[in-house]
Structure formats: C-alpha cells, structure tokens
Length: 166
Image 1 (cartoon, rainbow, N blue to C red):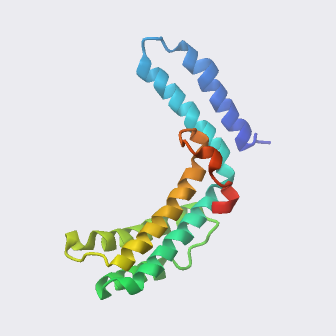
Image 2: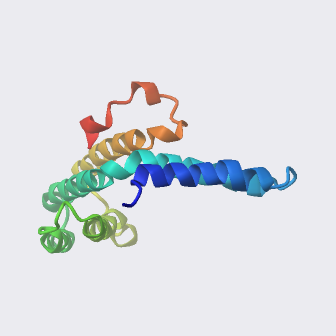
C-alpha cells in the first residue's frame, strides 16, 4: 500500500528541514533561502492538493462568466473571438485539472486580446471595464484565500473560508 499524499508531503518536508537544510553551510544564504522556499511550497501544496481541482473548476467558471459578460460589450470581432473560446471550452470536464487549466488558458488568451484591444486601437467601454474590475475583485479574493497559508496577507484572519469562494 502506498502512503497517502499527506504522509509523502510530510516526509519530503521533514527530509528538507532535518537532513538537507542542516548540512548547508551558514554562509550559503541563497541555498538556505531555497530550503525555506521549498519547505514553504511543500507545506502550502500539502494544504491545497485536496481542493486543487475544485479550485481550478471555480476559476474556470469565473473566467467563463467574464467571457460571457464581455461578449455584448465589445465589438463584433472581439465578441466572435470570445464566443469561439466559449464554444471550444464549453464541454470542459470539471474533474480534470489538465483540461480545466487548458480551458482557462484558452479563455484567458481570448480575454487578453479584448483587453489589449489591438494595441489600444479598440479601447474598452466603461461597461466592459466595470465587468473586468468585478472579475478582478472576485478572482483576487479567491487567490488570497487560496494562498492564505503562505502567511503574508496582512488581512488573512478576516478572509472567508475556502468553501465560500471555491
């Protein structure tokens, strides 16, 4: 029987903290910093892995919503591009993280083209900017909650639980 992912993460963290880290000379500041960085990432990954697919599914739905909301607010070429991305990603299974990530990239690329507006030749309407700001606020909150474990958000204690934003 294989050990659980939690056990494997704990063993990796322990190996880096108790075996690798202590043998790095004190004057090797960059190497010491990298040890702390690896331990930090492993610790966060240990906390996140069980919810990763659900989190990405929420990111996908949020980005689809943004694309759908932008369609009536942009010019015909941009709307056509957004509709094509929406159509291409419509059947994305929400239990497959690789497919979710690919769909997010497809939608994001189309949305980026709208935002860039052909190098500024197609400025966004006020309504489109407001839709983007609403998306940014929701996405930012989700990301802050998702990365609460890194301990650097000054307001982390007031953030909602992950279940509320997933």
